[in-house]
Length: 153
Figure (tube, one colour):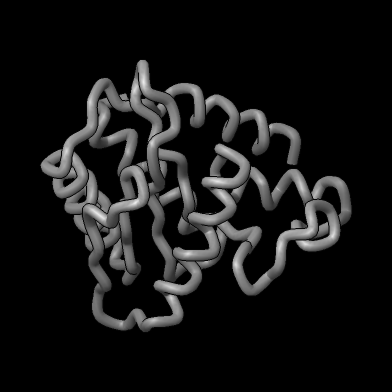
């Protein structure tokens, strides 16, 4: 688990945007959907920047429940400034939950993969990029693969 956590710390340091606009959000969102199609997976994806939803798409086979998972993952990313899977694994490594460790209610925060901080160089953490619909690690991996592809890393 330590190697996995170290890898996520590296992802959070590397996967930054030089700039980010509404058009960038559309392009990133479409890259995520293309990656899901390539992997033959069905997900819901959302991108928020400074509280405004700039991209949302729910593929066939997803439901409103995925949107609630995204909301709760986004709350984790915004609270900790780290990927939701990174935070979840840190809590698991400690043998606890976000609710026990940090007093964060499960109704609003979930330790699950798929949420990632939207970080812009010179501005810092300005939003979230999140997917839902797959098991934790798969949500995280699909999102990271999409971001790497978009950022050409």
